[in-house]
Length: 212
Length: 212
DNA sequence: TAGATTGTTAATCGATTAACAATC
DNA sequence: TAGATTGTTAATCGATTAACAATC
Image (cartoon, rainbow over all chains, first blue to last red; front, side, top):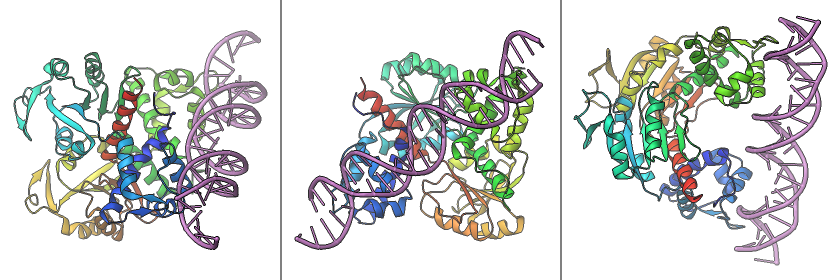
């Protein structure tokens, strides 16, 4: 066991630090204080120092932080140097959008195969991937030691697919199905729920209109 | 001004209540206590009662909550009965995936037009929509009183497009570009950042592996 | 009525912010 | 050295949980 329980609030700020530091690097800025970073990222300087100190003392009194070094450190903290064998399940529009998404390679997620349950899709090629039959997922996962599955399937059936995946050793799921998957505690689920995001926008728009 | 400042934490739980109540309705369950709901949704009964009481006393002592009535109330709180004129900007894979996404109609977001900057895309038809030239967005927004824009374009240029949209009166943006848009305080931005979600998954996987 | 469960106040917990000694 | 800024402790703020009187 490595880390003293880092809270989710902190974890979800890390990608933001990483992104803003990359922007600074691109602008050839190689030194930044928590105060300056605070002004561009919108967190308090105090919070920034607290957050970073969860993982180590990356700064230097009187100087601030070295942008390149800090960026690299946060990349390591995020585990972007690790490689994970990944499969994509569901080759509909959203699945295809994700397949075209360059972010995977940067994050070390190597998509090995794409599956779909629709007979009309099986055998088609998208982006170098021949779409495989969903019935063969378990076999593939076992033979290829797949770590992570990206789930782009409808709500119905998502839990069953997740159960199957967990049964053959998948340890992480990036879930786009609008459902809260139930998995054992050693399996990680990170969900992107478009409906919840849209409903939140709806709420905020209504609240905005009420304030007039 | 209507509501005494509801915290974001509460707001982001509302869609989840709405979804679980819909599930209960579909199973013909028409009465539920905070304790029972707690067991299926995973929040404490106390939190559920606190959350709901921000908006009114929807329950009845000794009885619990009427599922159908509560579902309807939360729908109203979320503003799902309101209609918003919407445009989709960026007709790439993700844009197309969203266009096929049925959720919009339920949430009252009526997509009136689809835009893209790529000359090869302009004029093509997807799902009854002829893709229009991004150069004509401002004109369209003004003429049609568009309320909300869905932004499915790359990071570069996203801020400029947002500026344009705000300039012609757009009041809400559902943002899929991996950037923190800067907008006036009366404009709502709800972002879905896939990279941040993926990086969070990466962190949690690494943390999980460290614990072995 | 007795039992159940809410609405709401009070207590606790955790996260954010402020402050400042340490130190580069 | 003097000035700047971190790392870290203490204070504050806000969100969650517990408790219970009100009441259906």
